Length: 369
Ligand SMILES: *Cc1c(COP(=O)(O)O)cnc(C)c1O
Image 1 (cartoon, protein in one colour):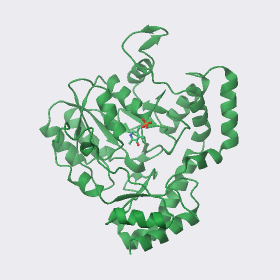
Image 2: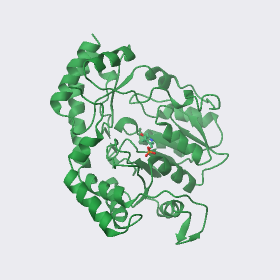
Image 3: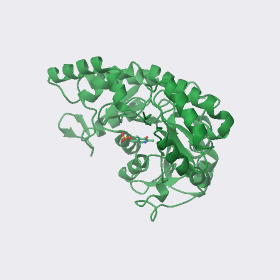
Image 4: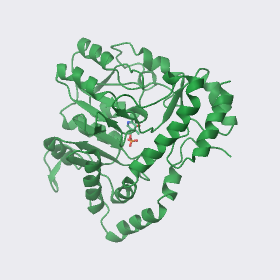
């Protein structure tokens, strides 16, 4: 018996009747792109996040790219973000035509406002910041906006791992100028294919993104500016309409599993090596990432004990083969690099039985002995 690190099929099985019916409804409707399901999802997800506007797109990567383009960010501009993220964050910045620059992280694995401040003070041409709410914890948006407001730069939220997370009473995606969401199957809100969405309170920005996602059309067949094809299809939207209803419940289950891990491991690993809520910030545990010494050996040992783990991510973006020779390093990325050899993601998905989580704790006890 092994415990997988994640299990997207379990989320299908938990809702299979409703999902099968929703898919059938779409197939019978004859409308497969930008129809009622997408519109309904956009309305419900905007309400869930507490924003005025939501635009469904084809992926989380597209969501980031389209926000940047709609903000007027492009060739010759720099965009600041972190290097310990899905390569997607940085790929999206480059696809918008801009150049990524990196700031360091703080405890909780999220963008450090102090490091961002020294980056912005020393580097000219940064037009936007992409703050990644990594592993389900929001970056400290209050401290970040205190920094960026000095420079008059907008903060885009990468919410791909933070559906439902809260910072200072506001949900991820409602705090910065806009939020980018991914519905990749393993995310806290996952489709069964690719999908994404953009949330914003800015009506003009939303209107421009709506045009950009479909060839720059404001009127059908008339491109008012160059756009792309990035739409949330009706099948994925129908699945998301079913699954959105249980997102809060799924996040509560993740938090319960995190509680079992935290209580079982705090005496062995120390609080600083375990994820937890921070003041004003409610974690939704997309991943439960611990820091351990001899990480690769511990991972192997857990493997042999039947516990699946993962490393998110094995190589920071600025050291990846596709980036390392051309990335401009402006400020030290000391914590990004130091944490990187120690991180280990434990099994985490809403359907993981609490008993399995307790066995994971026991296995870690053996593996780190
Ligand atoms: C998954 C993810 C993305 C990209 O989303 P896709 O839908 O796969 O394009 C972007 N940023 C982060 C932090 C992610 O985890």
